[in-house]
Length: 129
Image (tube, one colour):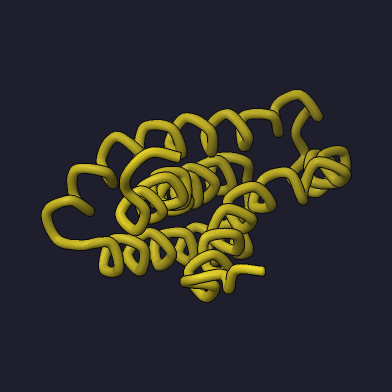
């Protein structure tokens, strides 16, 4: 059996992608509770997911070229810091507008995972499959 090279990188990439996937899907079961706590319609809370997905997708267009110029590590760390700011904002949200804005910030941060999960393995492995 061949030894798995760069195992630590594989684990980091899996965790990076998992954070991005869980950031929004984990709250789906409590949408009704969030709506009740913020005194809004349940359907209005769906804006949180829309804001996240919009910035998640858009940020990938930015992270790729930047990571080519300055390197992968600083871009990943910056993306995760942006995500943490968004998570803190979501934690402290007192109304729907704040929660939507915090979710958009989270999406901007976790967009780094979408790019790096594809870019870093390509950096390590070249040639035909």
